[in-house]
Image (cartoon, rainbow, N blue to C red; front, side, top):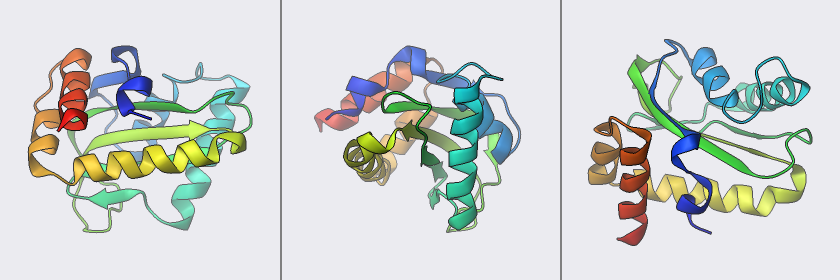
Length: 151
C-alpha cells in the first residue's frame, strides 16, 4: 500500500494553524471526522491515549500521532506542515513541523502498522523532509510524498 493511495490533497493541511500539540491533533482530526461528532471525539480519545503511553514525536521535526477507534470505519491518513514549530515531546526533544495522523478501526491494524512504518521510512531522509517542509500547497505536499515513494 502506498501513502499516495491514502493521502490526497483533501487530506493535507498546509499550514496547520494550531500552535500546540493538542490543537494540531484536533485540527487534523477534523479532516477525518466533523468536529464535535461522536467519531471525532473517539478519534481524539484514541490518539490522546496513545500519546499518554509514549510521544509519537519520532525526531527530526516529525510526529506521527495515531490510534485505533471503532467509530472510524476505515484507515485514514492526514498530514501537513505546521505554521511554526510545535513542542511535541519528541524523542529528540526538538519541536515538530511535519505531522501525519493515522487512525482506523481495529480491523485495519495490519494496514495501520504498514502505513506507520512507511511514513517513518520516508521521513528519515533529509531530502524528503525538506521537500515536505517546503510545500506551500496540499498538492505540492502530495507530490513530495509521491516523489519519495517513487525513489
